[in-house]
Length: 101
Image 1 (tube, helix red, strand yellow):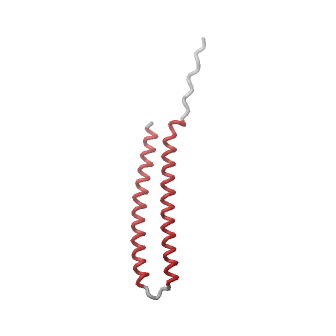
Image 2: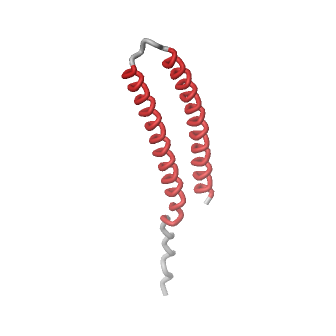
Image 3: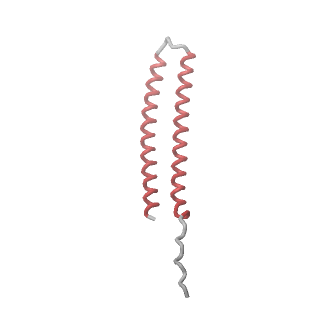
């Protein structure tokens, strides 16, 4: 029983660590995007088509980031379910040999 409890605590710790790291990276990327957008807005020589391509690129990496987070969250749930199912998967120990009469 302690093993399952320990496994659940480890999964919770890893999920919390991932969530905090992901949140920090997201904030960093969003800040970089804002700085880049400001720079692009002030660049008068850049054609409109190039700006659209840059916007599409930003949208693609945001979608990729969201998809990645969703996949990781889904797999954390699967891992937790797996460890919750372990006690029910354990086979009962064989009963001792019957005594000879």
